[in-house]
Length: 176
Image 1: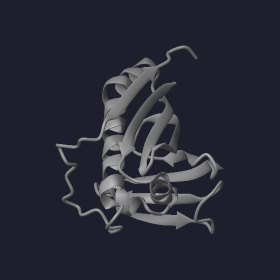
Image 2: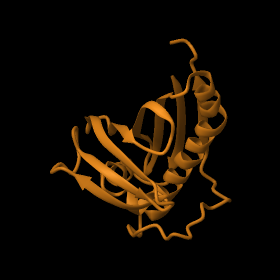
Image 3: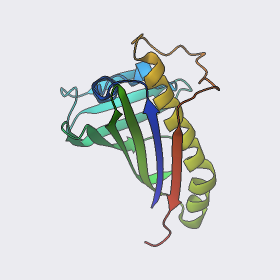
Image 4: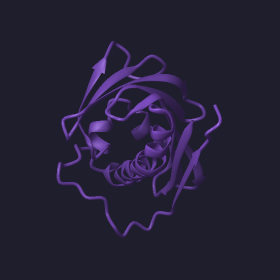
């Protein structure tokens, strides 16, 4: 099993950050690689809510919420279909208050790669860094789009001078 974790402090109150990240159909607004989101089924949020994210590169990801804790401001989703070579893929989004009018958001990805040892290497050296980069972009855009609430333009570039502290942790457990 491999894990990637990105944490970032945001200049937003915890309620605002949670409102943005808990809007399960909002990825087209805050994820720079998502072109559109198609809801699958009747649920808009909570356990069982599902969506298909159409990516700007033409790919597609299908996800379903498997855990939701409104009080803890946290939910977990399972990715069923995606371009990445994996057996199992879960992402947890969590929001905490760190001080008045500031919050800390975290994206934690747990997955089991396909293809044995080759998959482990692919995950460690290619997929985990890519997921870390995507997680940072996701949280950067959460901060910048909180006022606009409009779609991320196709030409969006993550600011290179971000003053927001970030932590990325990667770990690979090779014991099965």
